[in-house]
Image (cartoon, rainbow, N blue to C red):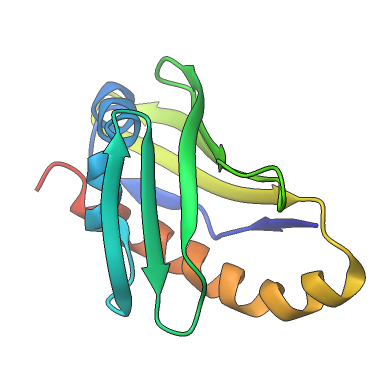
Length: 132
């Protein structure tokens, strides 16, 4: 399953966006309002739960300076990645494109597609909060 959120233009440099996204504690800022839990487990890992959803543990998997940040599931039970592609538009303007990829059976994919799409749209919308 592959999902993409609408691209978001952020009034920050690609360097600022990248540095914000590799500091995993900053993801709390991007989370939806219905977050029940957010806990940093170590410098590369955090756990969160949204209302009505199970806890998810995400780990920073890849960092490509000023171009891409990849987070992945800490568990192999439900393997997926959340990728932020960082595209410079000019010195102080950056486009961020979020995508989600995962291997799920048809039933699971059907159940999670809506909540995951909504979650990614919220993360994308909240990119305005970078550097605030």
